[in-house]
Length: 108
Image (cartoon, rainbow, N blue to C red; front, side, top):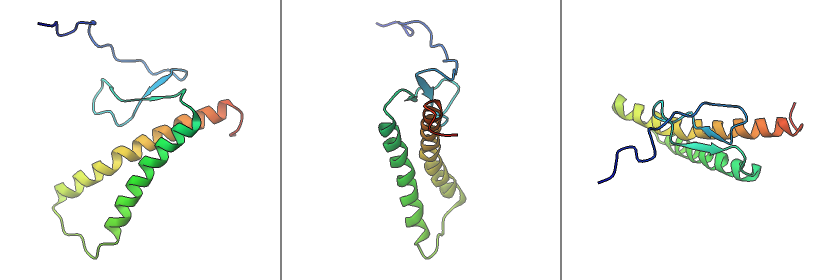
């Protein structure tokens, strides 16, 4: 039988601007488990942000093309959350890209 905390208790990471791994804003509680590698190549960060933003854009465009939307409010709330998570992830990735470009002197 294994111990519940074989490697010791989980310690919440302290955010630091120069930290390699940045917790995603969309983590569901105070103990983040999803992170962005802030030192990943810019093109990889861009592709990840682009993928998430375009996926949500496509879903919203498909919804907008429907004639009418009849749904219970809790379903719309769930759909909004479904869209908000990748949008927030994409924004987090863009924040990392912006900080990196600014540090390189390419953005004012």
